[in-house]
Length: 274
Image (cartoon, rainbow, N blue to C red; front, side, top):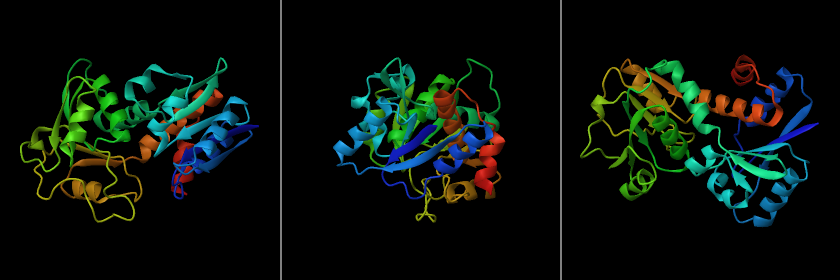
């Protein structure tokens, strides 16, 4: 029986169990998916859980806040992607080693292509990433590898500068945009929690921000299904999406790593819609 799960804190509203149980069923596999809500101060609890993966009692784990960076020191090995991003969202055993991987970047790009199309290789476009936390790392990595010029904006400019210093071809600005006008951008990605339930009346973009009609808005927040940022963008005729597609894509990629099966995306979307 395949035992999968998610580690994080808190986990009350996670959609991961629905997605992965649907993946198991659609691939004809017998298994289960559990939530492992471990308090950040519970280091013995974290070690015990990872020991279950080592002992093959758990096939694989997804990782979310606040553990994406905290688990790195507990891995035997990181994949090149996880090492470059500096964050882990997928854990599994391979060749008797506990491996930390990251499917967020590829999951994001796979969903983003639905809105940008397959741009010509080698041509750089301009993107703005709002926020400089753990999620932003994967987004910046993904965009740079897909030939985007990236600007990182954070309310605390030192956070943006710190992240920018870790990646070439990026620069940092303050989120109030006093010295930066985003009107010539092709893409804006929100990685902050602004707009997430219960902050549904909030948007990470300052009021009266001037945007081009060609700017695509991508909000990693997916609860609610239409955030204020996405709603405002669509009301101005812009193409906009929440992070639900990325959630499903990164989950499907992790599932394939664990089981060798590539789940049909329609089954994963259906279980969320229903």
